[in-house]
Length: 252
Ligand code: SF4
Image 1: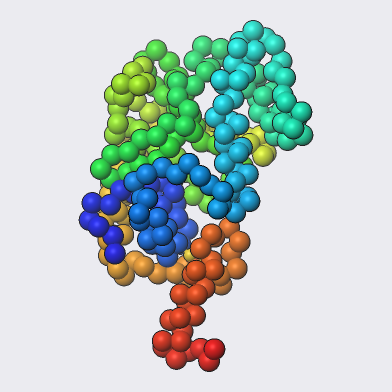
Image 2: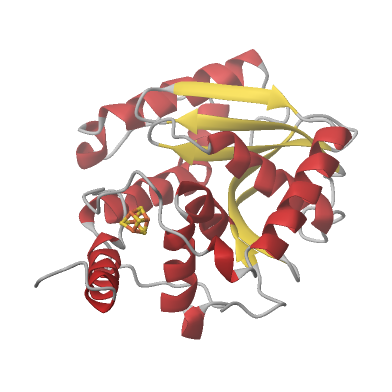
């Protein structure tokens, strides 16, 4: 059971949308470290570790290459990075973006962690859009997935609720969000209005209340425990078998 004051992270929110049972397992398994950020991911499956490495490269991109790009020098990638086709695509994409509009090109924040009494998460990148302080939230993902827009709206609400922020004083409101799919070199962006932000915040608050209700602890109907993208499939399968035995549905 969740405590009434629980903090909902972006990862947990998306887990709930994918499968409510995954969300409750995630909450239970990481209870002791729930409020702390991990810094060791060696127990993660390979595809997750690769994703973290890719994010780290993207996170350090401006630190490593913005001087070159601003000096019109084509950034030189390390040899192993050249082998990753998508890294060269990202360099070209950013060089083009800089040439098209060089003011406000460099992000005002990367890997920006925020947490309040209700929600927390780390925003991949924040771009300032103009002198008025309008900003855009940017997420990096390998490929499109089902709940990308919900994820961006989650971060939009989170950042909006924190403004103004001492560390990033020149941003005043979130007016746009975007997502860069680095494996297919596509950038999707959209405007976001205060009405959309308010409506989504109300939805999040309602969802947070519903999560406290035990009747929401249910498995995804279509899942047969073979979903390789679900880290909890083994433990979930065992819980399922145990319940089958309790109710006499299994002979083993
Ligand atoms: S294995 Fe299936 S039912 Fe279990 S947590 Fe994962 S997605 Fe949900």
